[in-house]
Amino acid sequence: MTVLDTQPDLQAGIDYWAKQPASLDGVLGGFGSGPLPRIDALGSRQFMLGILPELCTVPSTLRPPRVEPEPKRRYRALDVGAGIGRVTVDVLLRLVSDVLLLEPVESFIKEALEQCKNSKLLGTSHNDSGYAVGWPGIAEESKSVTFVKAPLQNFDPARPKNNTEILGRVGFTPIEDDTDSGFDIIWCQWCLGHLNDSDLVNFLRMSKNALRDSRSLIVIKENLCAERGGGPRAVFDEEDSSLTRSDLVFKRIFKEAGLKVFREKIQRGFPQGLYTVKTYALRAS
Ligand code: SAH
Image (cartoon, rainbow, N blue to C red; front, top):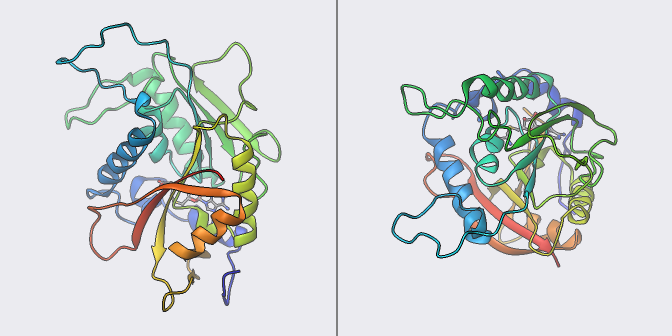
């Protein structure tokens, strides 16, 4: 496995994040007020639409569909280590109907829950700066977000109620409970460094078993460090007790979890000086 002096510590990681403000700048290490959030979300939506184009909701004026589109089934996504819900609101709710948001830090998940509940009052109008104010689909109750407080260690996506605290569901309520119904998309961004290699393999194996069908996928969008002279490498950060892995380390872990990479893309357009960020789409091998 990865050669390291130190491994991530669950509590030290949570303690670090609990001291950060519950804001975009807080979850993005100070990059929340620049262009990064918009570039990141746009890159993520484009990546997903290249794989599941049926999730596109932009109608065409020039080529209207000849037949009425089939009624879409409800797609469901999991957002892990979700912080204040940045990916849920700007990527996942723009593509799917239902999101389960998992986050261990109280101040972050409470902020996300509050913002989502506020959407009921705000609707999906735009403010003076042109920003959408509400979370998509929440005021109309056509979409939903379920808030689950727990760390990723020992979280089973097939059984989200086990070992977790459910804070509530906002928006659409299904007739039949869908909690254990699996996911079309499992999204992991900027949080997997808080798991050591064996916890990560374990989480990915459980995620694979919670995918709904052969088109469902796990998406990983993470910082990458350079390889060590062509070989795999991981760097430990004492400040937040996390690991930054190289591409070869991730690929070895994916293989061990029984997953294959069927698409990978480097995110372009981020400010200089940051780690390379890569998005991987994974399916069962
Ligand atoms: N994915 C979000 C947040 C990134 S910040 C986004 O892209 O905006 C990193 C997040 O990982 C924080 O919300 C932090 O609380 C969370 N985190 C830290 N340790 C974790 C763990 N053990 N399991 C799951 N999430 C964790």
